[in-house]
Length: 272
Image (cartoon, rainbow, N blue to C red; front, side):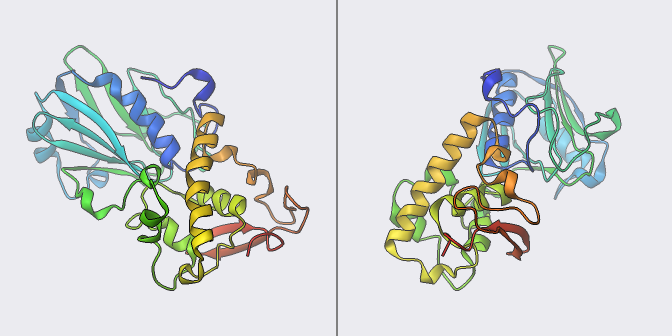
């Protein structure tokens, strides 16, 4: 099923995170039951741990049986193999000429046919294509799903999250580690921590049981709310992600620094 127009991040979105990739998977589910007639894998740099010959052999003539998502990874299951699609920072999906997301925040607003890095053609004439201007994504056959942690939406209790939050690293760095929790990106993590009042620099082994509970609830509630709004870029903190901005909650100066290798915005007034 496609997302209703009012819920699609169709105007602007951040780097594809869990919310955006779920909209891609929703669009891709339109091809379930179709037979793959052609495999366009002309861009060798976009093929990860595979090559054109292997992709054509595994996918040509196969029937798509399911489309699913783990974190930021979209998986297209067929009756012969599974295709894993990583969208990177600038990857978008186009199904039968329609795109659930028009453009991304850190990508070009143009649409150039030369940016089609991979495509599947179907026997009914339809097509699923990946448009990626900066070529930061990629496709692979039968990806190792065990290398990813549990999807962020499946953390059903505090103990499940606590098991993922170990060591001395900053909590933001751990939440961004897809081996720990899959699907959370830079904008979502900043928004979640801002809402929960937890400093992104705080070591995870200093989090209390109450912090863990607040964080788990914050992850689920933030994902649900921003999904309904239309994407990761719709958070309350988003407009304050600029030098000199103030916290929309308490008016304190927003701090900007690098945490876990990522540009981070947070409020030292209420995040501890």
